[in-house]
Amino acid sequence: MSIPAIGVRNLRVVAYTGTADDRPGTKIQDRGVAASPRGRAGGVGPGEIGNFIITGHRVSHGRPLERAPELKNGDHVLISAGGTVYDYVITRTMTISFRKPAEKAQQNAAVPGNPGAKPTQPMLTISTCSTPEDHAAGNYWHDELGNPEHRINKIGTLVTTR
Image 1 (tube, one colour):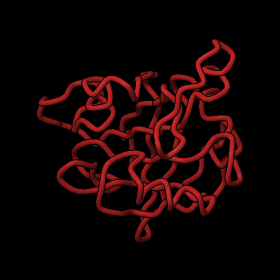
Image 2 (cartoon, rainbow, N blue to C red):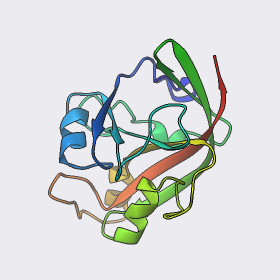
Image 3 (cartoon, one colour):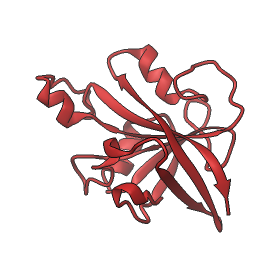
């Protein structure tokens, strides 16, 4: 994965069966790479109809997504897989709380933000922690895996492949 606007170049994304920010995904992220949950409760692969979810650390383990919150609408995210480059464009930001199951479901939904909606296009969710923002607001809550209360999700849609 490359995200030119924030200086991410050739970040390895490891696919696994699971949901965003679960124990297997966190172990992958702890190796300094990004994780991509797949399957019934996770997302889809690059270019597929539905939500292609990528999670990565922002403040630890090499901080590969340190600058993800800086992504703006119109910024490109390039995914290289199997000789194809998938070009997604960021369209919005969605912040969710890990303490609210309904919000967590929005992150993992086939249509980001709309649990239960049927997907009609390939979409992307880049997800990372909001630890600096939570701590600045005096919120030091975290789950058993160290995830802070809030996640910052940058949502995009596939615009082209080459």
